[in-house]
Length: 133
Image 1 (cartoon, helix red, strand yellow):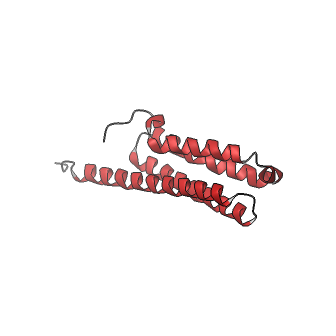
Image 2 (cartoon, helix red, strand yellow; image 1 turned 45 degrees about the horizontal axis):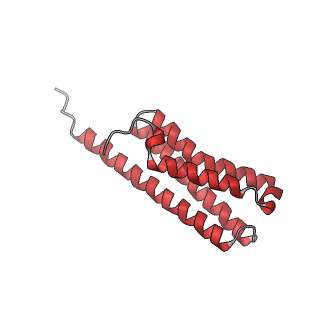
Image 3 (cartoon, one colour; image 1 turned 30 degrees about the vertical axis):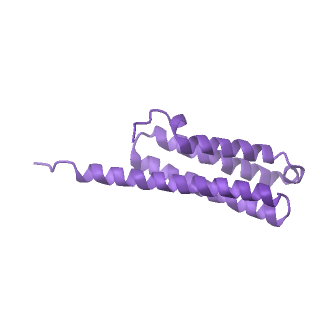
C-alpha cells in the first residue's frame, strides 16, 4: 500500500464526508427539522465519522489510528440506528433509508477492513524487529 500523507486522501474519509453532506441535506426534511434533538444527534454522528478518521490519522501511529477508526465505525452504526428509527416513524422513505443504510453499512465494512489491515501491518512490523542484544 502506498503511503498516505493526508487523511483527505483516504477513500474512507472521502466517503464519510459525502455521507455526512447527504445526511445534513436530509435533515432539512420537514419532519426531521421538527425533532431538533434527533436532527442534532444525526448531524453530530454523521460528521463524527470523518472527524474520527481525521483525528486518528493525525496521531501518526497505528494504535491510536485504529482506536479512532473504531469510533468512526461506531458512528456509522449510530447513524444506521437513527435512520432505522426514522423509517419506523415514516419520516424517511424506504428508498432514502435503503440508500443511507447501504452506504453506511459499506463504509463501516471498509473501515473495519482498514482496521484489520493496520493491525496486521503493526503485528508484522513488531514481529520482524530484531531482538535486543
